Length: 218
Image: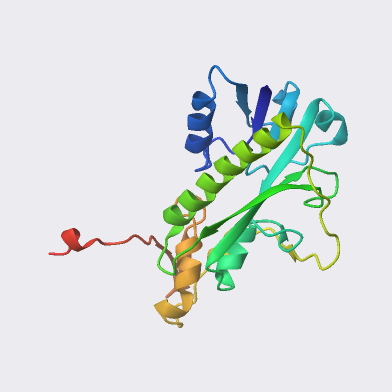
């Protein structure tokens, strides 16, 4: 099959996973990775992974199937950065959905779902590992379904919930609250793109969080 992947940011941490998957498909599928919708060339399947562009109907119809990977148990958690909002609400596992792309965001038919666990002490990179591995597995699930002639199931449209787009301000800490009270916020912040920060004494301070392993303590 001719497969396209659209990931809007070429520096997004999912990119190495997508490139590795592209390499693994050599000889089985023809896979291209693009970062702008205007560069898509049409084909059998388009996967939208960490894609911030709205791909219009005319472009979607140049593919046999257009599939979005979305980190929530749809119809709950439509919208932006759903797994981040879920962890901030105390979630200890995340469902990732593969769904058909439609003009109305996150409303399409469901191809498959998978769940991964999020330990209370897992940091940003560890959460990403679980998320990206699950997304790759879902891509494989969808391709297997297409090859078997299977179709997605309609998504329930009632009881849907929506998340707003996160901004850098959503990574702001309160210096007067304890670390424990804000640990979930600190651990989900992307240290490279949206680091946790706080304002104090007329200055802004950035916090980078990483684990210290036993053999590093001396």
